[in-house]
Image (cartoon, rainbow, N blue to C red; front, side):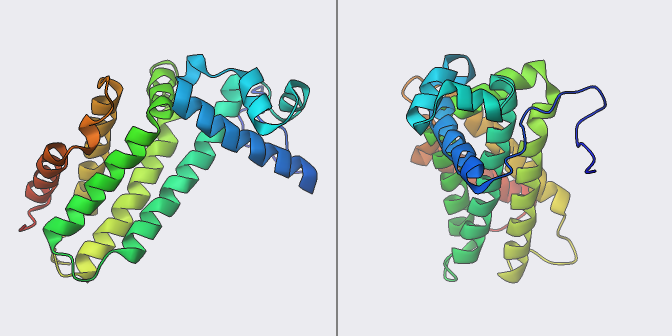
Length: 215
């Protein structure tokens, strides 16, 4: 018998999807949930609306997920998986002719776009994070993945020296910029500041100085 990944006495937030049809319904709910949380935040997102958007009954929702909190846990895992894929795609497709400054600028701009487009999701993440610190863990893992890929890219392009590169500093730079962009987005009524040229330029310069990269 497979061992549970949850602590003893802790109910599973999601029941296993054993059949192909069940997995398809789960995926539809996850996609609808990402849209709902991105649009309405955690408190505003309604299970009935999510189920309707997915074309699935509320009863089927509760067959798959214990409650909205358990659903958000599954949704966050999918969102962070997509985030890691975004980091991979960015690093794999980065223009080989970019300067160090251009590379960092595009990176910061992409981070700002993702956060700005998913304001409600990040609002839900911050809201729940105050109540349950474990909510923040997946985001930290995603930032570490991105930092590892970016560090490798900086090394490959010769923008940093392999003898002096500090991967923890790369992670801290990305994590801090991410936090700044999230706060800017959450407290910006017009939801534009995170992607403005001035913001991107200042954060790019901050990263470059912190990592001691000439731009």
